[in-house]
Image (cartoon, rainbow, N blue to C red; front, top):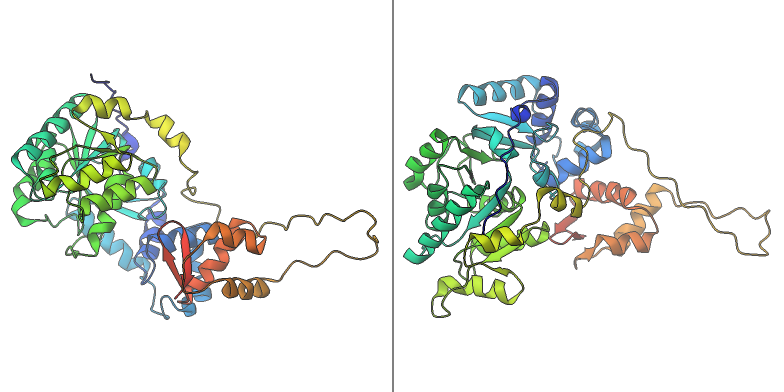
Length: 403
């Protein structure tokens, strides 16, 4: 029934690999107003490194996003690092080799992870268990049994420390390893009724994780962001109980967007808490009756990484990336060789054409690449300019529109 997996243990999983200067640079850029995970990733792609993006700040600060708000200073970033470490919180930047490779593959990986507990947990194969907060007794029992059996088979259990299914999964996995992803700061247990479980996870060698700086109080808008980390850290997501409109179904949708395997436990059609799971099963999720159904449906980690799109390298050389050369123009037979080929459009002309192609209705980026006849890297640079000027909106599914 079970497929035992060896637990990876990597001493390099300590946060802060690379140089102290790199960590300071990443934190300064991550804390810059209006620079969220997506913008951080695009700036890194455009300028090559966090240090180079910071150096180019005068170039893009007036384009809308930050409105000229001063950057966090190196001293402020160093003080924030020292305060976190003094509270037993480690910072793991995306340039650290110990940064979870599966998480690095998602569209908007957090630039910095804040960790409390044992960071080596991030090197273990992981499966997410999520579900209803107002879980039934049978749902809690199912979640606990799955977490216990999957933990015995070598999997770390990832969940969100919420009431109900999350709580049952974490409690059952205390002896084998669990990761709790928080919506607020990693130093703020939420909900408060799970403060004792928060302490038990840390004491048992588990891990508490967040992308929010310490001291951040959880807000409603933080929870969908938290959910993408639960699925992003995991090779698959198991939904035990979920209503049709629930945070667990948000996690399930994000799992599909991230190319993760999705599993659901069926339930009675008379129970509203089962309707979300039953809907997922109708849409193709794998049916789960026991841990064996999950284990047989999961690819190994290497196979999962192989089928995902390539991730952005943790740090590129500190130089602005040159635009790719335009494709050579094919000269039709009989064309006078003395007539020069048409000159490629200048950047300003391309920006104008791009703005003309966009409107309030979201459009897929691949369509813009085809319409403009340019490579995706050059388009990403143009879109970043529009975004920093406040004229662009990003939508799920790699779509964009004008603000």
